[in-house]
Length: 236
Image (tube, rainbow, N blue to C red; front, side):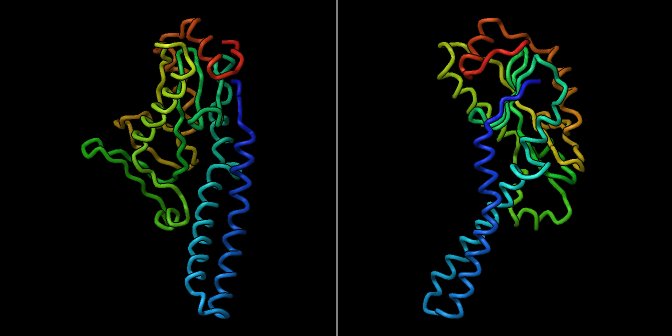
């Protein structure tokens, strides 16, 4: 599998994630000093406390995505490793973070870092997430699970709208979405969910198996797609 990665984007976001904790701590220290030495500036002190708190949350949010071995740009390629030269993974190259190009079209990969137990209640149409210290994790910046099938639909629409401006008029590329949980200790019960939800160890087989159920792109579609993406065609 070929990978095309926006290294500048990753470097920029990683740098912000690394520096935000220091900035947040510095602002909290300044706020504390002002509270004791300049009580007349209490409004400014409270503002600095709030900004420092936001910086801490931002650092956790970005750290979850861009820092360490669990960074999304590491885990997604790792999960797809070995797919073969028919596939190209785009990492932060389009309006959506992860797009897999295959013989039958595009797959938008929605990445989730949640561990613990994730279930989908078909009757209520809701997702549920249970994890130790879940409230504390969310307070510290971990993104809530929310309604990932709606996020997926939004990202698919965004990608299609972006491509529509670059493809020949009237041409469409089949696009689907999959929800990928990269945490090694996640337990999934979501067979009835409106979007396919998989662990990292499952997605490669799913891509291969589902490829047989998708019509291959016509040569004209394939050439136009790669031209729109401004990348060379792969060997597929």
